[in-house]
Image (cartoon, rainbow, N blue to C red):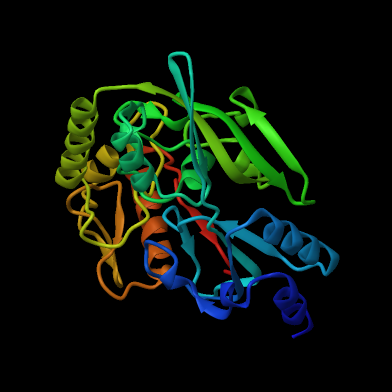
Amino acid sequence: MEILELLRKNVKESNIYIDENMSKHTTFKTGGKADIFIKIDNIDSLKYILKLSKENNIPIFVFGNGSNILVTDQGIRGITCKLDIKKFDVREEGNDIFVTCGSGEKNALIAQRLLEREIEGFEFASGIPGTIGGAVKMNAGAFGKEIKDIVYKTVCMDYDGNLHELDLKGHKFEYRKSIFDSNKYIILETTFKLKKGNKDEIERRINEFAKMRKEKQPYDKPSAGSTFKRGENFITAKLIDECGLKGKQIGGAKVSEKHAGFIVNDGNATSQDILDLIEYVKKEVYRQTGEKIELEIEVIGEQ
């Protein structure tokens, strides 16, 4: 209660929730409760919460849209922060266009804003679920392109509340990885280097990518996107399919029959159902092929 009182003095009370059900905030639609849940819409609030958590030795977890995480049924202890920092700024410099986006902006919305301004280069990310912050953190990609191909710089905050500006090299991008995986920094805003394009052509690409996603991926059921990473010398979804695991179900969790790389919530799944199915798939693929497959999603909370 003492911590809550301190929070209410420095953070909008309407942004603070107690025992918040995380199933409301993850695309899997599962997960237990967060002890204290706070929507962060400005940098000062974030800085204060980080200071408070450090001084009182309170665990803190910061996330974006919840589209690449699985929160356990036991929930999250301490303070959980949902980044909702909004910003959209466009600056032209010669043939280059620099677009700065708040980490809480949705990828789909940014794609539409860029379409309206006839700016190209972001189309591949138009259908990536989640926010700019999440896409940068995991170096999200689709259709042969990755976020690292368009990032110019990122402004972030360390857990002591200090601001940092990272250039492209400073992001340490790898396949579905970046420096932000170390939980050393929290992404506040990212600037992308794009260029002027033809509106009809940009719209055509966005629509083409959306059609391909709809045809190949199970967007009719809750999931966290692709559950497993691509292998170094194999396509994970193809391996899972070849092992006869499409349609495999544990509780309410199911390996999608449309795309074997997706585990979906087939109705009233618990996070434990999903975890159990993940382990089953990993063990079965290893038993049949000798290949170890790795998670692309992040498991958060008590286990």
